[in-house]
Image (cartoon, rainbow, N blue to C red):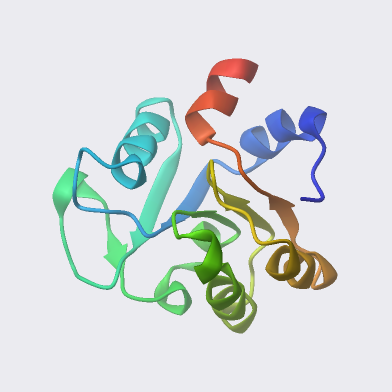
Length: 136
């Protein structure tokens, strides 16, 4: 993680649109209710998920490359830590990503370093809800 604690609020203020990588159609999963919470507090987002769904009214794309550029600058990831190298591969291939946010419990130092070396700000093992409540 190359983002300091005191920089998180400014990231949340700068990026009001983002992509939720792995936005689930299951309302009981964090990968669904975290985006709903952030949307309810003024952020806009789209999601990526391998299967199309319309739960929660989110626009869902199959791949990050399909996501419009203005939403691809900030990518909030809900994938297991061992899958992060694949996510970083997709992030680097899609281009345009400025912030890679790995949700609570997710980290992969080697993959994070690759993203950082490509000039991407990386936040790992942090929950957007917790950070929002902390700063707002």
